[in-house]
Length: 291
Image (cartoon, rainbow, N blue to C red):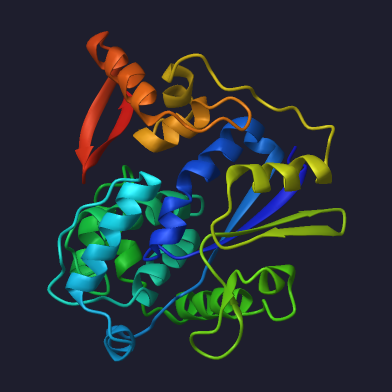
């Protein structure tokens, strides 16, 4: 039974939220189903012109991705798009998955993140969204894409956007981890809200894994906490959808040590040579899965 509810505010088009994925994996490894996760979509922009008006260009965004790649370690590809893209329609695809095939929204979210940061797809176009979602096994892509303008999907998405914009006066705002890009004060990606028995703790806007962990253990010190495995194999067994190198590195890290990406990659390559894992190129890195 889940002990703590975790609300994650994020957006598939945010490089901060994407770069936070290794820390999210650590929480999922350590606490498994003791945490009950809920994904709330921020909807950073509804029209690509919003980015253009702020001075964003395809070159600027591709260049920024290289900085995230070099500093935080998730897979990126420095490929400028034909134009900048708004994130709202991709967010609607995640909501459509939640309503159409409940439980697949996390896989859809991740597929869109991969597509956003490792391809040049313009992901506010339906065909591009469908291409990204085609990588999710068992997903009814056509059913999801056909619902992007469904009133039920739009209403659920607008509810997510409204909830994301309730950060005024919050601890996150006090810490300078919120934004006000379109009116109300909103949570930034990724922001995690931990709830248990009426107690609420916030860790917003890309935090170190230690900050998230402190929230969890203070809310419920009776939880069981899984130690890091000795090799990546148990991680690939737990997460059959695959992991990036930096996600594996974080999950192998003991206590507050720094993740060793090089050692993690070597251990993963050893599994590939032994026929126990596969490596699929993704941007400047890879996704590793069980063989």
